[in-house]
Amino acid sequence: MLELARITLFPIKSLPGVEVESAAVLPSGALEWDRRFGLVDARGLITAKREPQVHRWRLQLVAWGDETLHVAVEAAGGSRLEVELPDDSASLARWAGQQMGTSIEVRDNPRSGFPDDPDAGGPTLVSTASLAAVSDWFGLDFDETRRRFRLNLELSGGEPFWEDRLVGASGELRPLRIGSVELLGVNACQRCAVPTRDSRTGRANSHFPGEFSRRRLDNLPSWATPERFDHGYRLGVNTRVGMEFEGGQIAAGDSVETA
Image: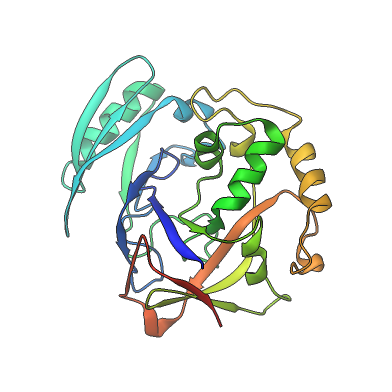
């Protein structure tokens, strides 16, 4: 039986995620607090893809409520800040600017956050078995694989790459119900440079994308839609949320069902 095993939110885009027991679905379809805050410099939104040094930052969830989020951030050298967001975004901006040696501001998008795929702004999902398979391919610790791929929802009880069932022909949206909320599978997540790097040091493996792509296509399951895999450097599924389910709630342990 499939169930929702884990929910991970990324309150500050490109910083580490935090595990939570439940999450609300916003009217936009995004999960509340997920990628809500973005660090911005003169070049635009700061991402780990562009700035590998943010891999060396840590984030801890201290407390959260309906209106505020209390987090602690720490840089590799030990500089640490506890801050309540969004009220004290200026302190986070100053701290991040000191670490990066540039002027930074914190932008807040409580409606939809800063999703990686604006056309599929719902939570990303993957099966726990898929992460385990990738861990085996590269001899990685399971938690390290989880940190590298940065997906919101993990489903337990399915085979490796079970989630490929949710990717149909171009333009087709395949439904998946988690508890009382229905998600619509849009596409298989195209990965960037981030999974090639050690999640704690930022050190990259230049052979990772090619090896991953080869193994992924060699292990493409029978239920996948091959034409949606123009290359194999894809893992997880981007989703949307149907309008009638916006404002719903999902929780770890919820049952998972396909239509």
